[in-house]
Image (cartoon, rainbow, N blue to C red; front, side, top):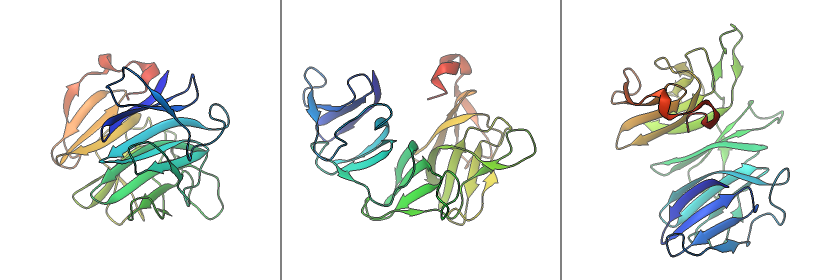
Length: 231
């Protein structure tokens, strides 16, 4: 079963959880070759499970359980990304020249569930000052898993798994503070495509042309079963 698939340069790259390996194809999936260089020797639960990827030109960033790696040669080889801490990857995105990775971590010098940003194509990473906090409808704000992140007109937008209607959060001070935007429940994915925000959640797929103030439905919740978590 492929956990994540992307096209980078002339190749399709797929990370699986059945054969526990990363593969790439130069013929649109007719044949596949395994990729080993720079990746963990043992892949699969619980050692290293690939969960998310993002591609940009010939660059591919791959994240998972207990590992983060970047490839600058169309997925032929990978290098570990030093400075990204956490046991799981929940979202990867690139906007302009900034890479973002949402993780889980329990480090005393980092916020809970930190979000890391790189401004030098993955060479160095720094955690944002805080991660979004939502109250899950119980009146006790806590840092939730940030499952998606993007930028829009200079602000950072993060999507979380809150069921209190405040799943979409915005920061205009580089992650120092966050505020809820609109009314989104159990968000799972967010992207800025041509200055339009797209969000998937248990409500379906919605888009906003004004930074999240108003939304219109693209696909209803019937297209996103509960088991798929809105991806």
